[in-house]
Amino acid sequence: MSEIEKEKKKENILVSVIAPIRNEENYIENFLNSLLSQDFPKENLEVVLVDGMSEDKTLDIINSFRGKFTQLKVCSNPNKTVQYALNIGIRNASGFYIVRMDAHSEYSKDYISSCVECLKNTGADNVGGPMIARGKTKVQKVIAAAYHSKFALGGGKFHDEHYEGYADTVYLGAFRKETLEKLNMYDECLPRSEDDDLNFRLIESGGKIFITPKIKSVYYPRSSYKELFRQYYEYGLFKVAVIKKHRKPARISHLVPASFVLFMILFGLLSFFSKPAMCVFWSIMTLYFILNIYYSFKNKYLSSFTDKLRLVFVHFILHISYGLGFLVGIFKFLNKKL
Image (cartoon, rainbow, N blue to C red; front, side, top):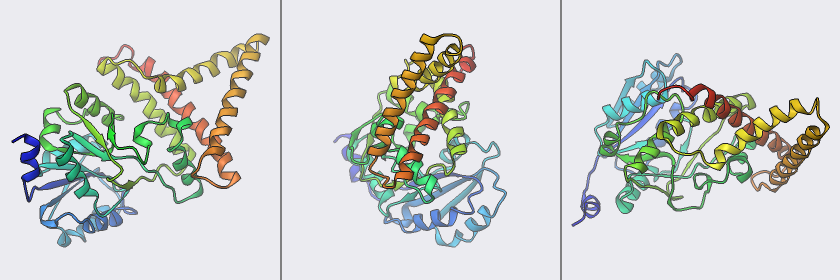
């Protein structure tokens, strides 16, 4: 009997949910209620919340739920960063399976059971669903629409709501605890891109990542342009650190935004002194905005003319912030040992 078949026959396996939290008073109650509404047996569910020294009413709200959970642990994370929180959660988890969750997302009632079934049936080492982005405010809805745009983010499987099969990443993820321990968990030296790094190491070690739309959750992205710019600047910045650490060549989707920003800087300056450079600059910028407008108005997640115009701006923010972060990352991490 194979290991997968043996695992399928196991019953009453303990599952640990780990969730990094910090100042979540507006979200934590809904999150805990969503865990209580899961169809997974409560006696086989352990919840490990890792608090980054919250300064609001987060812990008070959690304490009001203590009698509703069979197994609830609250751990402190003085470092306050996500990768530290995840490792603290893994160390304190007692489950055979670990399901990573986030307080800002919403989950279907069969989310945990679907993660467990997928791990059992596929034998994959990391399973999860696509990142289905939705918004509540006008700006957030436009940003969410960009997450489903091939022009914005390259059209990876991670953002395809219907794709099922092997991939290089999933949203959040569910694992066997022993898998994470063999990988030495998350790299605490990376302030961002800890998922990329973990999945790199998992695949390099022969592991597999499986994505399925049966694992359903909804992600609410940043709700302001400023927050979005900062987020994707940091994604670009620390993507370089991950690429350097693993000595893997950058993908075209990583290089295009950086090349675009570099082009804008160089030819933008040269255009003040050279007419040919000015012609090249405005030709490329015109082509860019033609494509940007085309894909913005083609986006099926938005209906109003105003929102589609906003999407043009959001596309530009995503490309510029990621590209600028990537360029800064090249200089920042070029001679730095990781």
